[in-house]
Length: 294
Image (cartoon, rainbow, N blue to C red; front, side):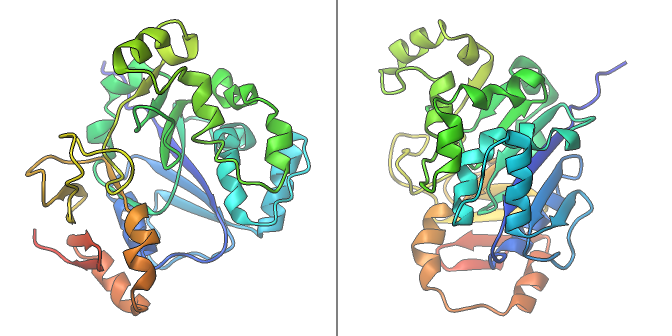
């Protein structure tokens, strides 16, 4: 009898207002029907939310109180962006929601998914207990961890985590201090970096593989250049781009366009975006989202 496909739950708290690309994020979730998402938010329930996405409505204050109770700290940040610091603790905070799941994940919503199971195969997931889509750090926008007590509590190895969770500074703990638990001497040349990793038991059970999910950032493209794709194609759940032929990607993190070109775009009619997101093909570029070709 074949082993069952490992079950995965993404946990994402998000407060404020949904971004204009939310319909596209949700459609990319819909096309990964055997993976689940659990969002906590005060933004309301978007139209046409897929069945594998659960959005629990609560205020930011109520969510912070829940975090405080679970972690036995006074978590009262002034801004929701502070939630990035507690991403590594979300499995512990929401342990009661993980029953029946083999893996839990934290991540962001400024992205669209391709075929996640094509990348996170059962064989791949059997090999490690943590999966980061960056080679030299934990990817705050997508990190999977096995649903074990050891992995739910590993965030407690962050130095002074209680103090750093409860102050009002954004420390980027998800990609900084949390990464250092698993990666020692991350700026060493690759042979030395890999050698040092063999002596770290946390590293030996973790996979850090560059997925090239975030073009335009500090990480060069897979050919070592800064010649990044200019257009991404989402077709019925499969994600490619205008540079890499038929090569598919597990997701596209468009943070660079979001911060730069998209911040200057005129507001788009939400109804039109809803209709476009329901199409079986669309493209993403520096000007936003457009209808694509199958």
